[in-house]
Length: 459
Ligand code: FAD
Image (cartoon, rainbow, N blue to C red; front, side, top):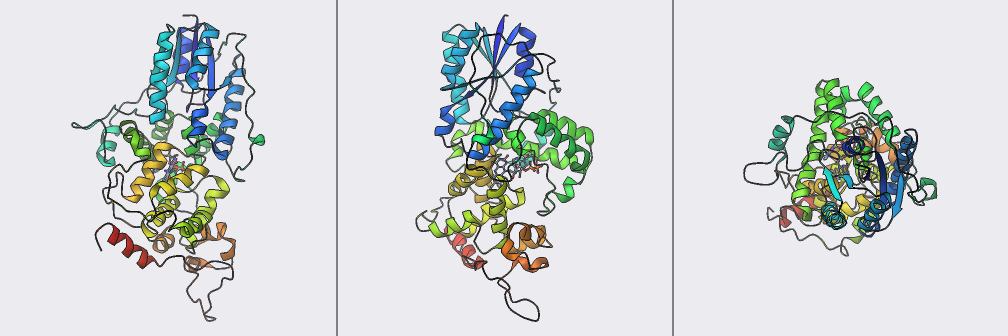
């Protein structure tokens, strides 16, 4: 075969890339293509933090291809039209790409297949590129997907993963295929000041450091808010600058309880992907309705605003929401607490919170974000849908010394120890609450809980 097009989507890497390797094995030349798709922007997904990270990824991918004699071709426009146009210009027989799970991705694949076949070309879609275990590979007897994690994980763990592929030594690209300029993060306004660097090189560096000196302690330390002892690989998994298959192999090779706990989290990612692949509507609709009558956005407007801006008067919640704004990232425990606070204590619709997270998270991911929000709200796959996380008790447990709160809430920087979690309480001999500008709590936890219990018919 003469020429293949490889369409890069959420797999922006050269290592362990099955579509690229298959194209290079079967064809003399390959066009590595990325399409800036206005459909993604129209769906509200093109937000500054992810656009900036994406710009880094595309530049790094292009640089990696150039050291191998190739380059990245970037086009803008409807993805199907753009791919067909490039395939025609290059005289390609086939297009290869990774499978993905959202309703949008599934529709894209169907449209692309039809359009290419009408032109006499083939579309090859590769599984286990964006996931370690692709949706549909493990299923229960009576359904097309698992709705509960524990049995899913048992089956997932028994799967034999494909081997890891090296990055190709050379990528010959046909001449004369026009490309747009690569985007640059410096041209983008509104980026979080502490946003991580994108790109495969940055991802591989972080992974190597993680396996060297982070993963061993993951089992004990992953919930330590101030310790920041998780991998922070999520944006690299989201953009595919790292391969989930490679991560699992390398973590298993490292071995030990930390690596085991880490691999379990990668399985959570696959779990949510197989749910969304089977139920794309779960991006918007309750996966399992509890017949909630959430407070209207108008009635809860002030509470929602206080939550978004990190001034609820609950220090751990405010610290987390400020971390999100500053870094475009938030610790998993903090995501659980802030989501529980919004949905269960304030009784605000999970979609309001999920939307805000997607506006800021650099790892903002339809499967992981919407289904984790649903898990916390009790409309998803949690087998205990009415559990509520108490922000004070949780803060005392996971930020025992209060260092996480002091890092993100400067108004409380002078409050020592765990007292920082309850700034409304009189402290010490002087007996006065310490804080001038820090707000009072916007809700009484017991009132919030009672409202939630009534709403779920348990009060
Ligand atoms: P680590 O603890 O080092 O875990 C390694 C990897 O495992 C992560 O990078 C991630 O890919 C995966 N993982 C970890 N926890 C989960 C989980 N609970 N569910 C699924 N996969 C997991 N993750 C996203 O990638 N994108 C999102 O948009 C997102 N939104 C979330 C919203 C809420 C309300 C909650 C509770 C969780 C959300 N998560 C999301 C899951 C999790 O919080 C992040 O993946 C994790 O905090 C990323 O940090 P890390 O890479 O250091 O994770």
